[in-house]
Image 1 (cartoon, rainbow, N blue to C red):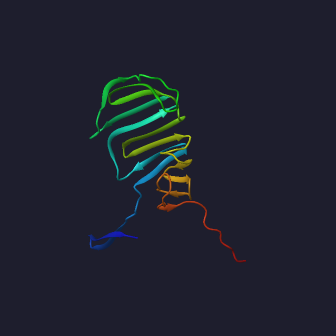
Image 2 (cartoon, rainbow, N blue to C red):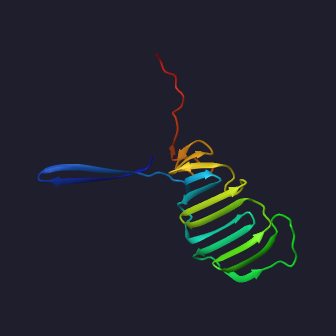
Image 3 (cartoon, one colour):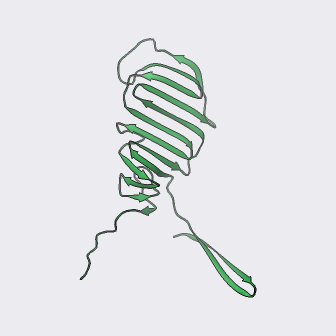
Length: 175
């Protein structure tokens, strides 16, 4: 492992103490899952930090977008009513926007799907499974249990953990 050490010599009332501190540098992934419950998760992004909050989502026929982040363009002020109406899935029926938010109604394609970023936090949800949650996820207190092998400090999907979790490998005992 990579480590940095600091040595120090301290003398107190004629007694010499030698102290050494060692910092172990752990290589953390860009994103660590904090918690997850089947169709949703919360993670912490350590390198791609959003200055503010932004996100989008849809629940059945309702759609929403919000943005209060630095260097992002505001939404235009307006009302959107299509000239023709269709019942094909995904067709937008109406919507309105006002600087920081945008809301609309559309023909449903999913039960829920959302992704939000707020500073170093990222939340995602999807049902049926799709991006940002392509498969079930289960995690608690930075330990991901499903999918893949249980591990701590790992991305929500795939990736190798800094700390492995679980029972040790099966070993034969001698008698």
